[in-house]
Image (tube, rainbow, N blue to C red; front, side, top):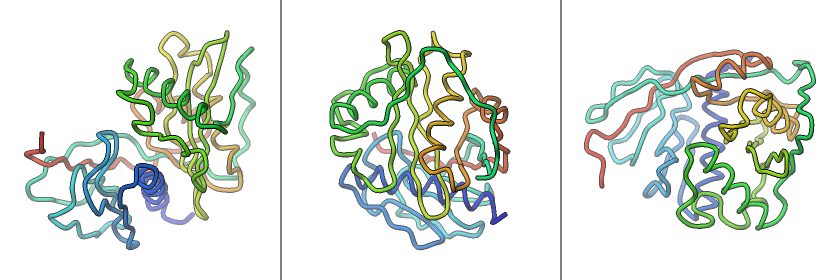
Length: 236
C-alpha cells in the first residue's frame, strides 16, 4: 500500500480544495503542504494540511494546521489530537447495509444542495446554517469530483455524506445522522453510498471518536491520528 497516512492527508486536502473553490477562496498544494493562500473562509475548514512527514509550515499560514503525521512542533500554536485517519482498500467486499425504508439521493440541483446543507448542519450539531450556502453554495453539485448525498427515512431528512474523488483516493466526509435515527445503520449506509461514488479507489476519512467503531465494522482500518495546531491567539 502507498503510505496510508499520505493518502488520508491527500484526501483531506482534496476536500478542502473543493470547499475553498466553492467559496471563491484560494487554496494551493505544492505536494508537501496544502494551504489557504488568503483567509480561512469558514470555521469548519482548516488553514493547511501537511502532506509529508517533514513538511515546513510557514508562519503566515492562517487558521488551524492539520499535522497529518503528528510530528511537528509549531511555535505559537497549541496542538491537540483530533480525529482518526482511517482507510478502506478498494477491493474490500462489505456486507450489504440494509435500513428498511431508507433512501439516499445525490444532490443534483441547487435546491438539493441547500437541503444537503440544512440536514448536515442540523444532524452534526443541532444548528441550522446562518444563511443558505454558508458552506455549500449553490452550484457545489457541479464541482469536479464532489458528490453530495442526503438520506431520508419516514419522510424526514435523517443524514448526509459526501465523496471527493481524485485520481488517488475517494475521501469520505460529512457523514452525519440525526440523533433520533442513530444506531440503525444509517451512518454505515451513507458511508457505503459515498464509497460507491468512486468504488475503484481506496476510501479515506477522518473519523470522530463516535464514528470510529462504525467505520471499523464496515472495513476501515485506523492508520494514524493527526494533530491540529491552533493559533495560540486566534483572531476574534
